[in-house]
Image (cartoon, helix red, strand yellow):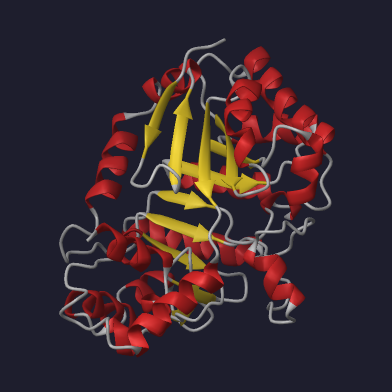
Length: 349
């Protein structure tokens, strides 16, 4: 079997990656500017300085999705009747948003939050526009159901830097129990075909990284090793993320706060680097700061009323960042005191 290298970040059950030899070939081809941007990503949040725009902008080009994955917050919100109206961002608004942010310093774009980007009819155009402007890292997560051979060819031609396909089991029974509405054989074939097309016509050099991502949970935890062997010859790397029980985390942290255990002194040292690295633009104009704010509780502004770069430096964003330094987020931003990143900070003390 192809040799691999594993890398763990923090709790190995929370996040880990296994890299296969083709990953290095892809990475070696990246420009000096790309590596500078990645170093800046690591450095942001160490001090209080911010640039005029986030390094990474997460644009939810559509909040539509064709699956009902069991662990997805979107599925839960729809089930409760709390999900917001389905939208698709248009080309004019998209150009305006990413031009504004690039001019102020953004260098990476990710095309989704809770939606499926391949449902957007302009996805190939969006990638090409971003690369023409100069974005160094253009990427998105996908469930892979719409990754047809023609779509794969178009993505590889467009300049896409990273394609990350979610795949949560090495057997059809496990996978289809989690990815409700998806067909194991079809999606697995789609991923293999993407790699074949890339190897045949787009591998010298490798410009588009292919990653598979697995959300580890009780139902599929026994298949972690078999996932590695299944995809070792197909993808460049594979990541493993532990499923997050958002309701339990929120409830436990809220209880500790109400009992007085959490106060500005006890949480000294907590900093959320996402408030320095990235921002989330939703198709209805809403702007949020965090990948864990599934309910969109932390409203930083609206791009229908202000530019994204203007929102990035507005008073609301500044108040959020400052609150993490003095501990006042416990009172001012309840969503932060019930967040998994805050939980991980407390566990590390």
